[in-house]
Length: 82
Image (cartoon, rainbow, N blue to C red; front, side):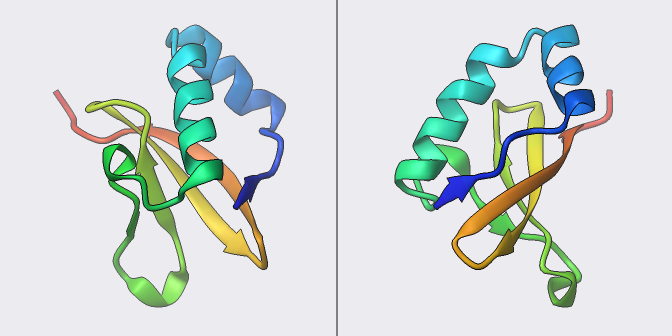
């Protein structure tokens, strides 16, 4: 499954938080196998909204929608609050 190009604000977020390498690795894994075990891809609650997430690392997640054969990442978030 292909991931749509990221919006400019998400690229800035990845650069600011030093996540570009992790993003590229996760993107590559996702595009080759969206259910790769290290991504921990899941459908979030409430399920009817159709929002999914996958891991960049233990702290950061990419939130996305699926449209046809493409995924659109709309947010990169911290998973745990410290």
